[in-house]
Length: 471
Ligand code: ADP
Ligand code: MG
Image 1 (tube, helix red, strand yellow):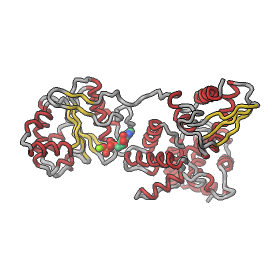
Image 2 (cartoon, protein in one colour):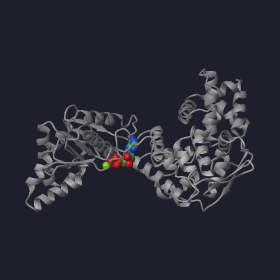
Image 3 (cartoon, helix red, strand yellow):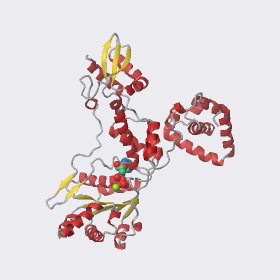
Image 4 (cartoon, helix red, strand yellow):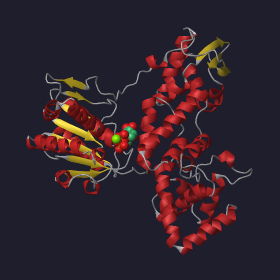
């Protein structure tokens, strides 16, 4: 077996229990440079791969290699910057590890009919499936699903409102795509209000308003995005009003988005707002922390990059006003990553946020351990001390028991690890019997509430911090 085939086999083996994104990120442009006397010399394309491979993949690589060729007894790493895309030594990972799930819609995002009606859905990557739901947007998502299935029937008009970057355009375009997918003969038109206004102006100028009218009144579903922009544009509003009525009377689906509820669209005529209010009004708000984190993880998977959980948590924690901003920060982090060949860290992202975000960047709980002063208290010591203090066995604190005698010390540990040791949620979770970071976050939140009302608990916590030396 040649070195290239051997390397493919090894990566295949390793990939059995790792996410594909990790393989694509960290095994890109790697190769076996030499295989002699039982030692594999593995070539890495960039210096920063070295530490990562040594700590994360060396053991797995050796195991996999031994499994395939028992004569192999060691793995050695060498950085060789001549290993780049297209180099004859490296393998095309994307080809060997094709993505199993394709999220993209099939390439039928445009249908055209004789009379010039074009149903064009702008962004095929917006789907109802890849919209992540949370209590803040679940209702809007469900209504869109229903409308996509039964247009013109249950929720008409559907009016979705909320601040910028919260997923309105994503939802309504996805709904349009879905409607076309369910029935390709349907004429679905998505238009921004700006585009609609432009068409009306053009129609007036070319004295061809009839054409515009016909065009919009022949559709099966009309989606109009950001209706607030029609305010004060009298003629466009008038046209829209008539189009709306015409379609509505024929039972055609109307979907409207806006940055605020109808009653606050004060510059819009009352007759139009009352039409909107007669339908289904749903707001979208900023998703909670867990959802923001899930969105980031999803986007990483789509982009096929692997970013440290701590970093994602840090971004999700700090960006809480817009999903678009959340994505923006992630994209920026990925771009820097690709430009500078350094994996984003909490520190590097914090630096980036400080220059780009107006709001204060909160670091608490995210400083990596190596930022602590020498001789800092370790998690190990903290766990021991808390277990001792409450006179409970350490194994129970680390375990799964839900008895309050054990959950309380556990929560105290999480709380102190976060607020005093400044450990990230996922690190705390790992150190405490492999708990999920969301569980940790929940417990810390609960602890903070309890301390406010329970003076004895506050005294206990203070006593522990004194004893451990972290007050
Ligand atoms: P709006 O129209 O409300 O200003 P967008 O629909 O343009 O917001 O959303 C901004 C970005 O955030 C888009 O790239 C969109 O895909 C993404 N996004 C927003 N909400 C979600 C969500 N719940 N799940 C996945 N992606 C989302
Ligand atoms: Mg939008």
